[in-house]
Amino acid sequence: MDDQSMEKDQQQSLPGATPALEPILVVDDDSHVLQMIQWVLEDVGFEVRTAVDGEEALTQARRHRPALVILDMGLPLLDGSQVAAELLTLYGAAVPIVLITADGHAAWKGKQIGASAFLRKPFEITDLVQTVQQTLNHQ
Image 1 (tube, rainbow, N blue to C red):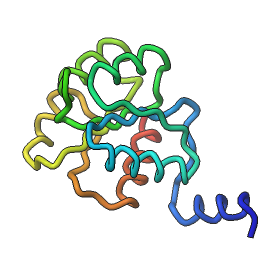
Image 2 (cartoon, rainbow, N blue to C red):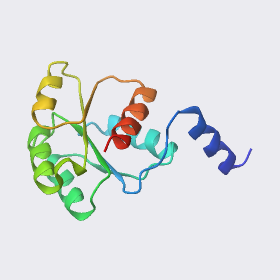
Image 3 (cartoon, rainbow, N blue to C red):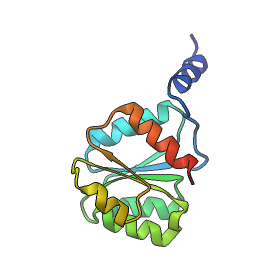
């Protein structure tokens, strides 16, 4: 099976995995989580950019408007709520935010800061892809 056939099969195995036009920005200070999310999303056809802290996330977002931001709440330099507030100032609801955190109580805070969706760590790969796709489809 060639690479193109494998990619098509992988995209078909995850319902609704249609790439966004702009890149997805993934922000997490845990390099393992960051790499896993990047690999999964690139594997189904998305372009992904990454940042390891809040300041780098905002620099990336200002440089290239993301289609969606996957944002960890517990970040160094600027925390997730500060990054989300600045993203809302820059782009309003045009750039949806998916919050990821190990803190189950953060879901209510996510709604307060304008997040479109929430994933609690650890999460399933299929849940990640479904959440990204559903969030992009509801823009």
